Length: 290
Image 1 (cartoon, rainbow, N blue to C red):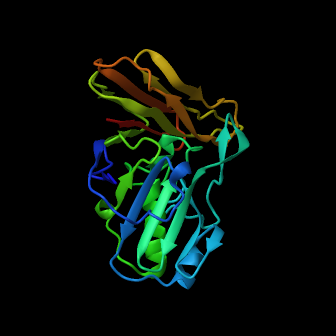
Image 2 (cartoon, rainbow, N blue to C red):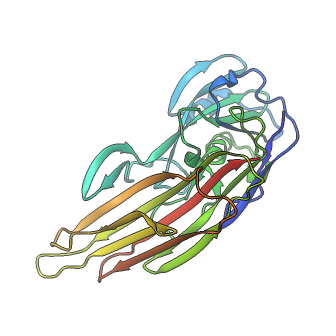
């Protein structure tokens, strides 16, 4: 089978599909959007690996399978108990987890396989380390789930050693991931989809952190705006009415699969703070194509 090889995730990078592997041969692939597989070259103690799962769905003498939840408010993708677990929108907590569930199978022979299902979005592959920190994506959510297993069992991990493949779109041979983040400033970047490409999935995803440090004596508000070409995909500000605290901490997606090809599209990010804590805006374009 063809595979995707990660060449990087910072700024704009392309994952190229090529090669073959047998790591996923025994898995039901009918519900896999994108799969990543990795081997550190040594056997794995399943009794150790199972401790890293958030939910276990199947165990045998040869493998353990279940869910590893990747949290966006922690650089390790873990939940240490003191993070923002749910999205907060317009100064109200929601029931939307600030996380992505990654399906994982760990095999005793050393292979670790992780994937997004067909019911998930392609933008769920983007991992920003720490949603309100000054950092670009260092890995995918699939890669981070594999890292968590290797970290638990003491196996070396190299993100460039993770191979990727799309079972839902087996003809796809490239996956572009990239974008920018800003702190209380402005930033512009561009992307273009050539007419010669066949686009299977294309999404724009942004993560937003707005903090209002107002008090009963003064108003210290913050704001953030994200625009693709001439259309705003995010445009919010804290109330400035002396509501101190976290105002917005959420992820938003936009389907861009039908955007005009052979046209350079502009992504513009800008933020402002008035004596408040930092404002973080992170955005990325994710395109699965041939």
